[in-house]
Image (cartoon, rainbow, N blue to C red; front, top):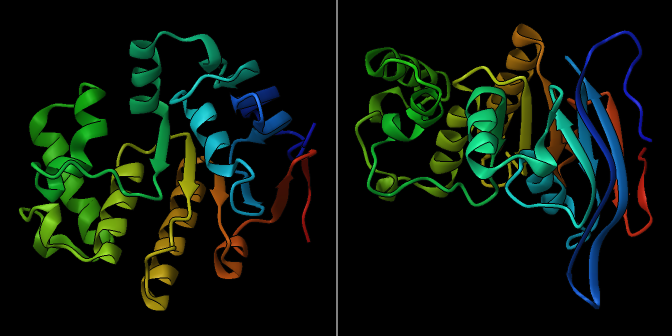
Length: 230
């Protein structure tokens, strides 16, 4: 098993994860991974090896064919979808590579979704989402719709949505992939701040050396499983 630093409570424990999409295509063949509170881990690997699939399994967006995933003690691999959604709303922040912003909602409404799903009062959710949009440099666009934004701006909204509810586990799939260097630096600093202030665990999928540098622990996913990366 890929082990975290000693002495901190586990946020994530994944054991023996297997995922096969068709008989001839197995993307995960037995992955073990643990993350402790406050730990930052960068996940590297070739395209198509299963990095995004691993994040989806951890978040409960897909089910493994075998193995277990526990987040804060909850058995994500066998939770009903409604319970998995509640866990994501309370405890998991997911930065999707493809943004997944809802086109009919304004920016602050998109960012507020985890709060509203977590039963935060609408006025408080609006205030917190607007504050988070300020932190990613989009405070003056709160009432805009996603379609008027550039790809980099949409990525910043996705980051704000992932962090607004102060999750205990942050899953980030190429969070700086659409950002210019200055915006990437600011986004990574915000992620680091949230990890430090909230004691969150971070699993960061990236091809960027700049992004990987914020993680003291780096792992490479291969067909054989996880191994330490330089």
